[in-house]
Length: 137
Image (cartoon, rainbow, N blue to C red; front, top):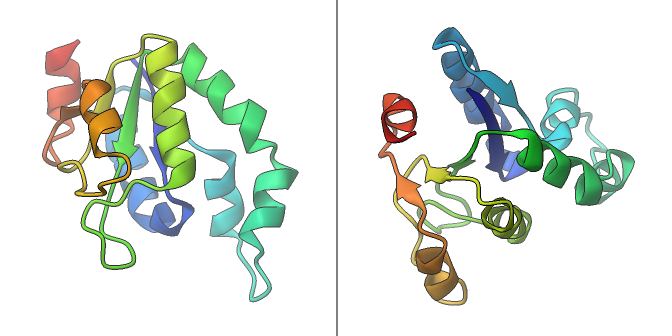
């Protein structure tokens, strides 16, 4: 199965471990291009420039469209448990637009400004168990 990962770039190291595990399970993994840039990050790393350089506005939705499912890797960030940022939220919207099943690695966050929308997306929470992705498809 082809799985597209969506995440905050600050979760890069954790996401690389998830991608490795999925690949070991036989899945093809599509990562955000920003993750690649984050891995070679320098002291003057500029996340805005990185997003422009890889054209995330067009590239990641293309990956979502060609995938079989989307996995949202959501971890605690800035004191928000299981954070889903603006970019990731937009990517979830794209996934639902293309009728892709959406999985969240962890429970959905209590972010009031997106709570209702997240509930309407019918996100499947897998509680860290990657095997649940294959079981649900």
